[in-house]
Length: 123
Image (cartoon, rainbow, N blue to C red):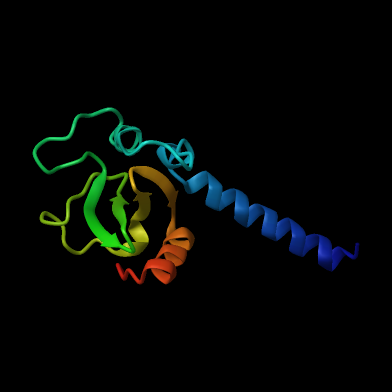
């Protein structure tokens, strides 16, 4: 391997490490197939929901597409709420997708797949 290729490989590895390090521990604990209640409890650090408010969820949207119930929770580790701080950008949030009561996946790459498959637009 040439030094140029080695430097590129090292830079890519460092970038991946930086991205992984920035990701919230609650997101790292999510596993595909988890029950919706477990996902919500994990995102909320075990804090029970109050009225229509879930701890660390900026907003929640529900869709019925192709006979599937799709819940999209926009995770915000800062616990901001859409009605209190409407200027939060999508880049500050992480979509968590639950389909028919089970965690399907999370993150913008996964959301792009869901958008394409079910024709859901959230950006």
